[in-house]
Image 1 (tube, one colour):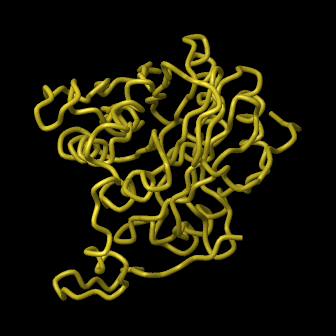
Image 2: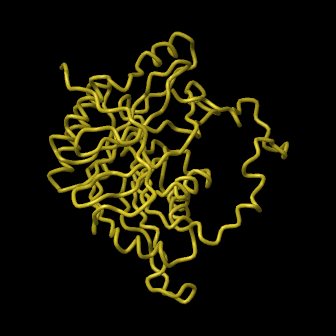
Image 3: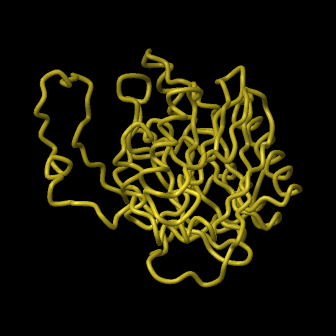
Length: 328
């Protein structure tokens, strides 16, 4: 199967500060919780079919799991196997990605797809957000690569960017984390400070239990909606989920009534799941409540900005702590 679609733009994310031009009352998210195919061609076909199903259900954004292009195939330890794995990496103008660009335009729906990105030193674990016009909005490389495992073969990203996504009827300010990024509170905090209202998290690991609690906390402390999409069984355990970041039902914290911010959580089965966010309510909540940025004391957080590792118990020979990989 060949594709000749023109690649999307490679422009930097649009600054998000300032008023919204238009209003999206409800945002419909399609969580494409799938099991991977045996090769990129299979995953392309399956991913495009899931996006079509999402569009039939009137989704605004379809989201795929982590490194969907290769089904999160693990990098072998032997040199020859590692070389073959790295050869699976693709550039941003590859036909595999162009097919998603064309589909986003045809369906009038944004798509967050994921892939092993070709990079000068070694590949990157990358997510590409394509808008409903088929144009690239945000390209994010995983910062917190799992350097204790096979992801030591990857080049980590070095920043968390936020972009304004054009949705029919308005805009939503979005950022991306990938899998292990959620285990570091700084990831979601950086995105909140960049203006994100919604954080999308492609995932590829067991998610039920403690890790969903992590996501609940990240949403709570940043007053930011978070949607996570995992592989279904048998690849992983599913449990793709959405938290809306609103933990009080009324004004007047701390006297407001507590509410469950869980909007949706899947089981382990394969499907395209729909969840709806009330963006008007979230924006009103962010204006009145106390989490997020209003009452932070940044001057007291001096250790957060230091690369120095002060506690020997955390020494790791495979750590790439503090390394900076320059973007092109």
